[in-house]
Length: 236
Image (cartoon, rainbow, N blue to C red; front, side, top):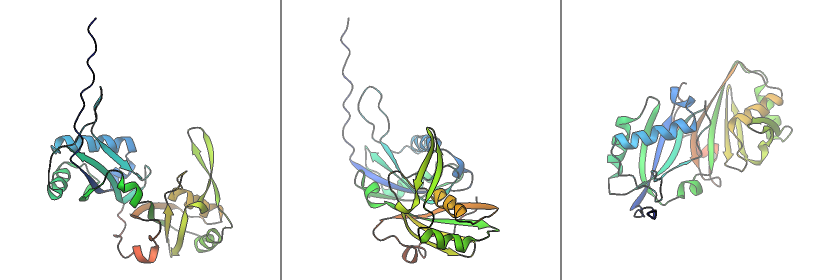
């Protein structure tokens, strides 16, 4: 019997790039797996010189970070791509936008170090927009004071208790809008968990629309400094 040949050892990437993109409209409802597959197709169609892993089943070296939950819009999504050949950031951005599906837009492509995105972007600014809210300001006051912090979230293994106070760095209400800064904790506290806590604190509404506006560093990302940089939330 012939000896099985060892897998090909592929060369290391020559560079890593960080891709900042948005997912809005119908793309907000795509699953994380669907988005990952969409980017693999975009990279093939745009002829991006992506580096592949070694082994018997090589795959493109793409890393996704802090993907917004299915159903939530986002103006601040990020991934890293390893390159096997040189291509300018502007060329990559234009090539990916030319093949991007509806609701996905590439905002910028910049050079980075592998894994730097997870270290540098460890908090998010979220906006929750409520229709016909009742008792919203009082609920925000109660949540900020720590009167309600525990919520229940359904998972694949049953209900999970989430303490939103672990991640909640700032919370502010302005009419029908609530802005919040959440650290990327483990387990992850979602913006929808904070919304659930507001309901437990006595607020009610017809509908709620969640949009991630920015990602940044937990040590410095705050509403006052960040809200002026964020774009107006898009309709979904």
